[in-house]
Amino acid sequence: MNVDSIINGVVIDHIAAGKGLVIYNHLGLKDLDCTVALIQNVISEKMGKKDIIKIDAAIDFDMQVLGYIDPSATVNIIRDGNIIEKKTLTLPETLTNVVYCKNPRCITQTEQELDHVFKLTDAENRVYRCMYCEAKAE
Ligand code: ZN
Image (cartoon, rainbow, N blue to C red):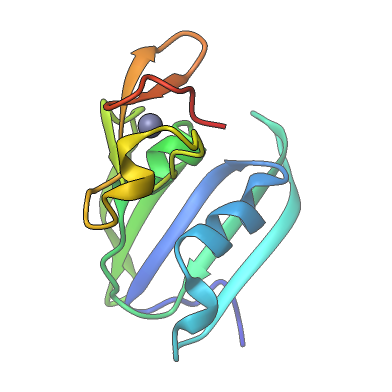
C-alpha cells in the first residue's frame, strides 16, 4: 500500500506521538475491512514527532472519542484524492460511554442500562467527572 495515496478516506494527522495506538484501539480500527495505516514517530517541524493514521475508506467515527484522546489532532476527509474537509477537534464537554465509572458505589455499577456520562469539569487540566457520582475519569 502506498500510504500517501488515499483516494477516499480519512487521515488523522498531528496526533501527539504515542497517542496513535490509543486512538487506533479506541476507535476500533482493527475491526475495519479496509486498509488502515498507523504511522508512528513521524518527524514534524511543528511538533517534533507525531503519529498519523490513514484509513482507506470513507468511514464515520466518534469525534468525541478523538477529541478526548487528543484534541490537538486534525482530521482530513479525502475524496477523489483531494482534501475536501479539515476538521479540528476540541475537548468534548460530555463523554458518553467513552470512559467508564469505576466507583463501586456509583449507580452505573448496579443500573447496567445507564449510559456512563462524564462531564468536563476542568478544561485546563482535562478533568472529567462522572455525572452521577463525580468520580474522576482515569
Ligand atoms: Zn460514577
